Amino acid sequence: MSDLPGKRYGTVNVWRDPATPDLWRYLPAAPTAQRAASGRAQVTVMDVGDMLMLTVGAALAPGEAELAVAKAGIAAAAGGKPADIDLRPADLSVRGASLLLTVQGAAPVELASARPSALPPHSAAFSAMLQGDRAKQAKSAMKSGKGRLSVRYDIDLPATRAATAKLAGDPTGVTDIEPAIESGQLMLSMQCDEGASQALQAQAREEVAKEAAKLLARFDAASGSGSERDRRAANLEAEVTRTEAAPIALSLEADVTGWLT
Image 1 (cartoon, helix red, strand yellow):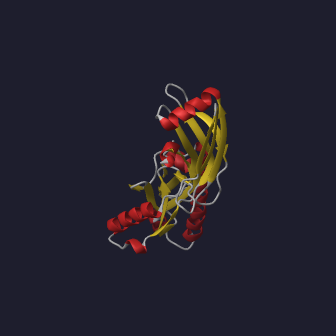
Image 2: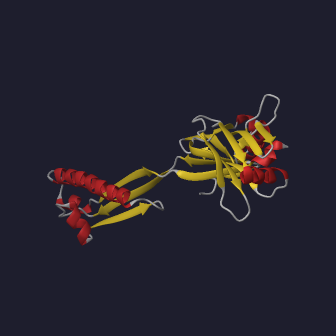
Image 3: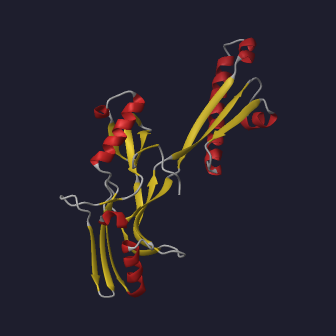
């Protein structure tokens, strides 16, 4: 799991949209309860003998007060007004969501899973019917805090990795790019984001060589009308940047017990 991006204001993380600098994106640090018009969390617990029935509604939807805190923080840092801040939900995809029970000394157990809505606020509904020891453990988690009943969202935030290849040097006498790179007459440099794949790096290298070949052809065409001195003074410079998808995987988890109060 990666760390949450951007800057934290209260319970919300915010960052500038990379494609639209005047737009801000937000993501709550944890899932939130779906709430009825009355404000009551949509969590139902039915305790019948040794059976426990749970229904839980969750979302990624901070309240207006939390968003107001985030806007105020952005405005203060930028020297603007909160009303002028365009703050919108993060552009994300949800891989899945789970209702989990964790007891001390054991790995989390999935009680129910859900497919949240693809659109904000990515609402999800869970339903679980527990019996025997599992029901006792869930009751204990909710009533005495011995254990944890939680909702977890597994999400991906869109991101890319880049690889930039540069070629530079004196093209005098160069007829083929690759031998010129090997001999050092043309200098190849690579600048890559951490984790950039070998395939991406190879693509950038291949395409910068093609771009350099085009420039070389132009030098050759121009040399017929120019002097040899002009040819020697020329410098070949080519640069190519290529990107690949590199989603940021995150898991956001909230204690459901807190939604019962």
